[in-house]
Image 1 (cartoon, rainbow, N blue to C red):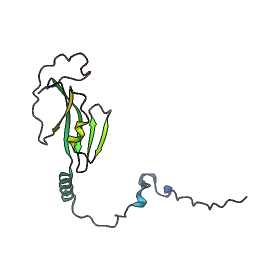
Image 2 (cartoon, one colour):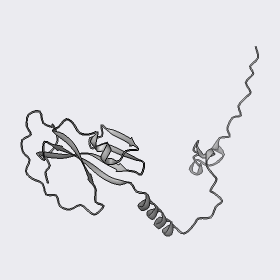
Image 3 (cartoon, rainbow, N blue to C red):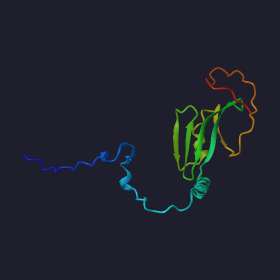
Image 4 (tube, one colour):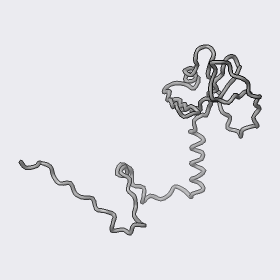
Amino acid sequence: MESDMTSVPTPTPLATTPPARQVRRDSLEAFLADYSGMEPLCDEERFDRIAADMVADQAPRLFALVTEYGQRVDAAVTAWGLAFPDHTEIVSVDGHLHTSHFHQTPQEAARRFHVGTQVRARLVWCDPTPPRPSTTMEPREVPPGGRDGSATVSG
């Protein structure tokens, strides 16, 4: 029985170019426009300013989820979040949890982190200004059955 398959041409190796000058081709490059013949929009310094302005305009808002134990008995930063226009991303500080909450505000997403009546998550928006010196209180005993392994933080 004869095969109906046609032979596949063998790609031309880059071996004709000295090894130091070989260009790595990404397999997705075939789907991109060819920008190699286009002139730059501006000089490097202006392009950096344009990119920085674009980032500032589109940056998500940063927030923390501070877990409150009891009624202001103790607290710890347990997760960080990014608020985008259409969704919220939350990552726990220990790296074990990463959640995406589509079509939810950070406040709505934070409610999912409440546990019973004794543990709740507070949403704290991060101020983009430099951090101020911390005002912490001395650690104290955690009641039996309380949280484990976290430093006590109050402020």
